[in-house]
Image 1 (tube, rainbow, N blue to C red):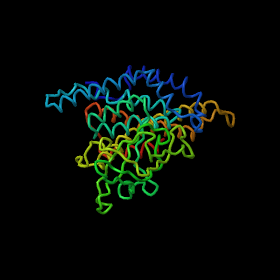
Image 2 (spheres, rainbow, N blue to C red):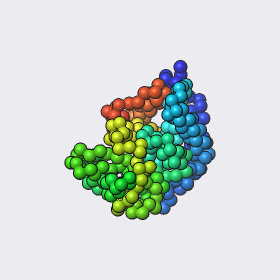
Image 3 (cartoon, one colour):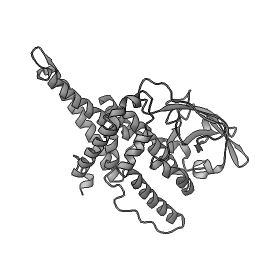
Image 4 (spheres, rainbow, N blue to C red):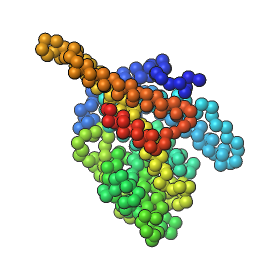
Length: 359
């Protein structure tokens, strides 16, 4: 079937790309300066995009079907796996990423962390009640989500150096700690907070737990957006938790004994984020190449357009090689999705490294 022989964009993909391009040209290009200098949060424009292309309605439908299947499974009824649940392997979801990145990559980060990472953390390990309570609003972009793992003293060694804690108090938990560089942190309605269970054991041996927090809970403070070098269209902030009391209903999975706990959930989340980077890189590469080719035709030096000089031709040729390679990685991601496969963390990481460097 065509689904798993993806070497070019289908006519349907091309139509959608054109429509998304028009939206980006009309709704985002005119506001790039405000978005990139932090004057305009990206969420209203993203919601408009979701409404324009029916992405919110599609998310509602697929969420409803998934919850019905899970309820049936809980009740011990046979659940048939919907045929072709891979769809086009994520092509439709990757196209907006590619087109947005041509103009405003930060918006993709803001969108991806909210409807991707944060909802995935709840959808993969949460109870049905938790999914209905928090995940649907994230998937439709009605609410903004943040996924809080990074701390001031922990970057790559996210688990080893994690200081944030949850302490049991009767049936509740008391949460303490701070997080930094959290995408959507300043504006999040729903935050997945990752911490360690302080049960008196050595920090290295402690369980990793995830809790869902709502904006405005007592003791939970969300900073204003940080001043950064760039990508202000993806607002980033700090979170401070001072004795935040939460019930077990906010513990993802409502149990401390999730199979493999919070670590695997976070790893799966990183993997998903890494494969999205190839699509982001492709948008950036395409825009750069288009601008460069145009400039090589327009810019005249020594009496001819610079595109007639070999050095410039070589640069453009290398750009085209990078574009083809990254596009093929994106196609491979889609094919694997359509075939119900996921990359290993090593593959996803290699793809991220190559694509980001190429961009």
